[in-house]
Structures are given as structure tokens and as C-alpha cells.
Length: 172
Image (tube, rainbow, N blue to C red):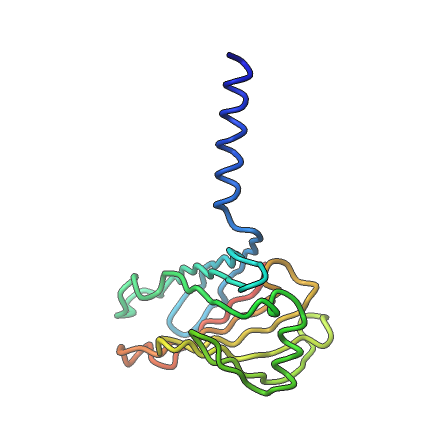
């Protein structure tokens, strides 16, 4: 009976861990003109031979009297990239090509830069085909999870006050 119970507990833990994120990194959202800050998490949900998938969940704390619904300032974005983007190879390939189309977005190399003491970081722009945002990412291979040190989301919104608004998200 003890062994059956132990086997059941181990099986449940194995199933739960297989459903969890492969890697995770926590971020803080810097204060802006319309918001007081916030938090974000990037989780790598797939990292295999066919694709590299990162899910970014965010919660932006708006300032008082800002006429934007809370639901617009929290949510998640799933970014699906070719498998080469799980490490430096994808970013080097993008640098060579300049831009590339992937099923749900257009990727564009912007520049190499130094970011927070990390030399030769890659600055790229991800423009999802859904038309809701533009996402600028600073990648360095020494950083956790997706390797993103900074993410800048530019909102493309029907709310005039939010259209073109930027939220700067940095690794904790």
C-alpha cells in the first residue's frame, strides 16, 4: 500500500512538472507616463527541434484617473520562433538576413549593443501579425530563460491614449 501511494505521488509530480514551463524569468516594468510599474514573467513552454515558444505574462499598474480598462494592461503574449532562437544561432542568422518572416510575426534585426554590462547583445524587433503590438527585445545568451534582458512593448490600440504607448520591461 505504501509503495502504491508513493508511486501515485511520484506520477502526479511528474505529470505536473511536464506541464510546467521549461524555464522562467521574472521582470519588472519601469514606471511610465500612464503607469506606476508592474511585473512580467517570461516562460519557455517549448524548446525542441521544431520550435521555440515563449509566453510572456504581464500586469501593468496604471496611474489613477487613466481612462484605460485594466484588462488592456494585463494579459499574455505567446511568441513562437524557429528553434534556432533557443540560443545565439537564431539571432546571428537574423543579423545576417536583416529580417525574416515566421508564421505569426516578422522579425527584424536592429543592432548589436552593450546592455547592462553584457557585450554584443542583439536588439531585435518582433512585429506580431495580429497588429496589437510591436515588441523590441534585447537578447544575450548569458541571461536566463529566453535570454531577454529587456523587452519594450509598443501598444497598437484603438484607445488613442494607449496607441503607440511603450512599456519597458527589464529582467530582475
